[in-house]
Image (tube, rainbow, N blue to C red; front, side):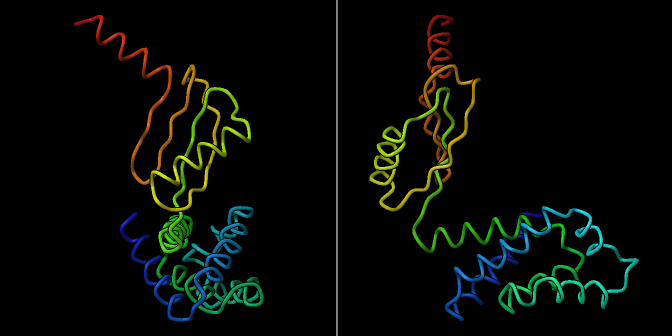
Length: 176
């Protein structure tokens, strides 16, 4: 389903570019996604083939016409019409990836065994920005299984500086 999510997101991203509204569309998508995540029953309603399509689309119009750009609403309506509203979250993720790439921003997922201070986060961000050549947004997550150190995943690469990895390397050397 990921390829289809990417296809939908790319089409909307291209339209957003034509309208010089990439960031506005991203904000509109987030408004709709947040509402759907807060009300899972609303997703069931929008996905239900037993409810007339006109009624489902009318509910979308009522809920979002004043809150999101027209093309974003049309995009969500298209997902409902095609029976793909449950793919909304994946489409939004793909759109965000396209937007980050456009703005030359990388998201670095940082897993750590002990909380990072603001200074450590700043230094890590600076090193990653130097390495990648563009802006980096850190998403930090506590992971006690690391035992020590950090693991950074960014742009499809993994930099593992964890104690767990080092212990596995020592074990491999000893077992040879």
